[in-house]
Amino acid sequence: MAKQKLKALIVGAGGVTSYMLPALKNSFDLQVTLIDGDILEKRNLDRQLFRNNHVGMNKALALAKTYTFRKNECNVVQQYFDREMLDTEYKFWFHQADILVAAVDNHPARRDLLHVAKELNKPCLIMANEYSTSQVMMYVPHLEAQYPMINPFLRYPEIATSNEGSPMSCQGAALEVTPQLATANQVSASLGNLMLHNWSPYLFDDQERGDWYAVEYQTTFSRIETITLGDLANITVPSYA
Image (cartoon, rainbow, N blue to C red):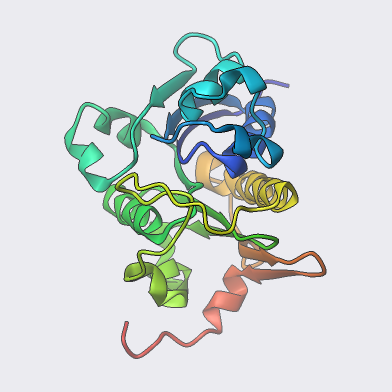
């Protein structure tokens, strides 16, 4: 059976993406754009899937080389993401993407990509994790009329104002506050792949979706919580919305 074609734009090429990308490449006929201005350091190797000989290389470029993409299968942007990229030559890759993926650990970059997703009416997959916990969310802008709480800004209003996060800010200031365990990176990546796989029939093949579709997974080492479209329908929209 031929693989389904998928054009993904991924912001952040660190720990989560390093675990997500090989499964994504094996599951889809993938064309990917990787955006990250960060440089691989030796201390990253205990929790991120990179090769020793790539230390000192840009992370997006290192992942592209690691997984031996053919010509025109992978675009690499060796810069930190911000919304102004849509006013540059990179805008083509945002417009052609089937899905936008936020795999960065800071709110400024996440909220910028969420705003871009709404502006372009593109689904956005958000993967986040801390030391030992993982969280994955799917945002589909055109479903807001039916499910207002699918908007992550309503469920987590701190995303709209907080500038916290590590290991980088969207301006490129390096931080190393609480590095994630390799297991947490792997879990976040696995749940992100699962979320994308479950949504792909609706997003890319125009098949009917149901209220059982998961829009969020939250995990610790002892439990996993799932929030579905049906759950969102039963959550009251905040008065400040």
